[in-house]
Length: 166
Image (tube, rainbow, N blue to C red; front, side, top):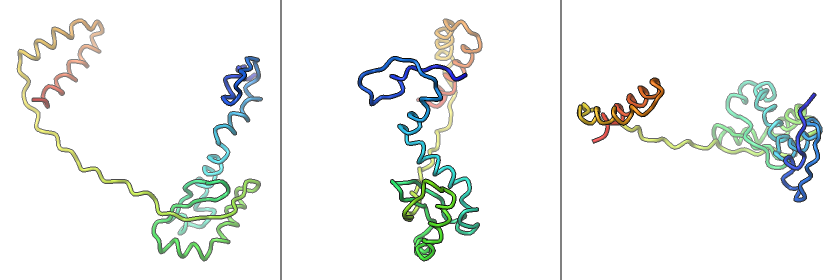
């Protein structure tokens, strides 16, 4: 049997908080629709079977991106393929709707995948030896940690930090 939930907690839009208990199963559809999981589930189904739906070559160069209302947006590797896909758009739309069945899309649009900015690689300075007096001072402070494993981990962390700082 599913656990009981307070329905007032499930519906944010309901300003008059109803604190009656209900079965989880009866509240799931409200949660599912309020979180727009239907659209996400449709996208998941497409992503899982994409190469089967559109064919191996097109599946390798494209991927479903998101839904905006009843329009499916697809990431395409380059603009030349966007143009090619425009010519077979009706066929692709038919294939996609065959999979989605009752939740069909009315249009397909293309976009290039977002470019991930390259982050310059950071080089750490060379570690230097830690002054023994500083290490002894920190060990004295760390003695207040009762758990020996935690105390040793804390000391190792400090050792690494101190060897890279000035």
